[in-house]
Length: 222
Image 1: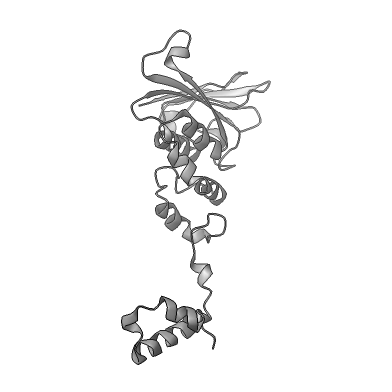
Image 2: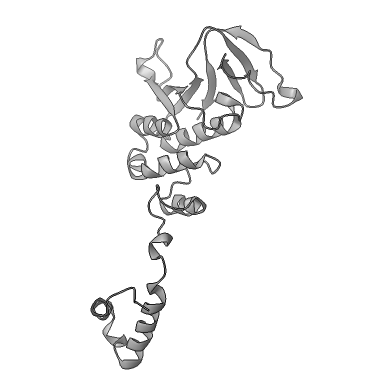
């Protein structure tokens, strides 16, 4: 049985107090036991190669719980994790918001209060999110609970916390679209003609669907 460490290297890294006959024998036996084990398979530092079941541990290791919704598809979780350090370094900046939403497949357009017409309330900004990629196709499309939750989570994790946000969601407009009001989620939303009409959450949230050519989804967050 071969060892994991060469004998010379094992002796080099062994503390002097363990280098007596008994300690050396124990370390040599342990070295042979782990020699045939795929040690590298237990490494979960790489977002591309870590096992899917280890992703929650890697998210915790990188302190990314506030950025990543646990229900996001595996590919998106890995995409965000690969940019963890840059994303954390940009917390509180517009660049961080744009990067975070970009990793979710969205384009963020940010207008500070002083650049708006008419001028907005001081210390606020308008955030328009264009959805380029549906997070989970088939899950009510652009305005699914997961899409909305993951978007808001990323915004809250990356925005400057002292700044109020007028938040709008949009999808590229095409000749005809559906529009509806989501009573329970406090979102006014319109959806592209190529996707299904906005979902009905329950009887209290039934919506009237009307044709339109513009997408405007607005919800306020603080």
